[in-house]
Length: 115
Length: 112
Image 1: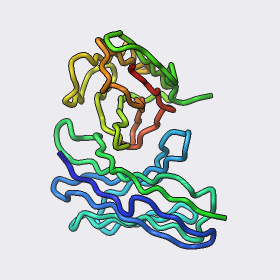
Image 2: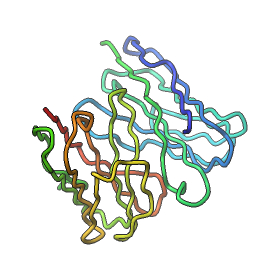
Image 3: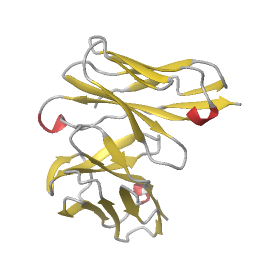
Image 4: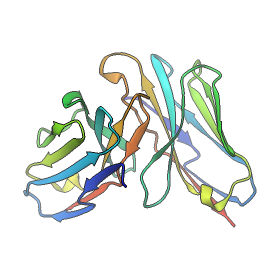
């Protein structure tokens, strides 16, 4: 059973604050790391996929970095807005056999941005 | 036009009954999945089909039987429902980018 940990479990910030949270995962046989954003009453939506050590991806005010050697990824949100409020999920996938394309989701970080 | 649609969205039933949840995707993807959101809110994979062929089958009771009549549909049939089957079930599909899943809105199953 893969252990994917996200921290913190929840986070409250004020509008305009910048914030970041962490995903840690086993690094052996690593293939890719995915971040998803899950708004209440909606379905999870893919944000980023990263595969290489040192990868950095950016979408608007949200960016993510990847360290495959030590098995962690950071997600950063600059100048948080109330519409950023959601649960952010990370999910690594691993190489080999039926592991290909199979994601193991963390429990998520619940972000609430207060106006 | 919804990309991945599941029906029903809500299902309340008695223990011992048999029920199905249907899923359809109009994205032209080859791979479809069923995930279960457990009581601790984790999303856990149950099954994956690629072009109608089962490729991932996690340790799921054999009361759960997926069926893929074509690559746009993946249905989940559950026999002899138990209280512990109460959960939200998510269907998803993926295309060329492995792991980039497109999720349905979920089907909340409540077993009384």
